[in-house]
Image: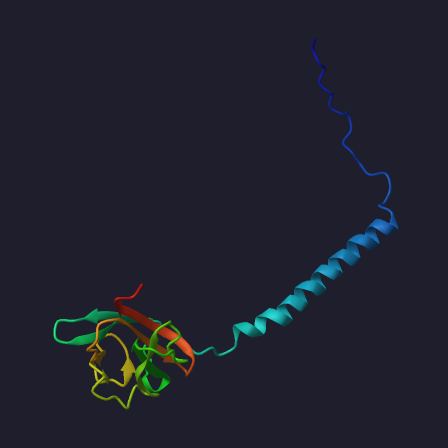
Length: 170
């Protein structure tokens, strides 16, 4: 069985009358609503583009045990002033500290803002002597007892930007 193809019309389609007023109103109101919605989205989201957001430095540390225990700063996503950073060194102990949330660990030593105030247990050395935390700097650590050690670097008081675990950590 063969199906016949529809024939081409002799005259092209021409609208004989205008669209009804309801359809014209609907299209107009839809276009206005879309424009208003785009303006509202621009009001809400465009100001976020212009907010001055401080950079975050993600610090990658490398354990170096060639001469003692040392944590070398391998890379930093954004080199920032030392005054923005502090560090906490945690190790094996019987009690749990707020800065060291791991079970069975306690805070051994800290470096305050600017990574200053070190002692024989934990010291910071600015290897490049430029006042910035960047590759080439290192932390010297003295850890005698075997166990799980945790070293954390914080930016702007509470933002964790670097973490290293070593020893007998699970």
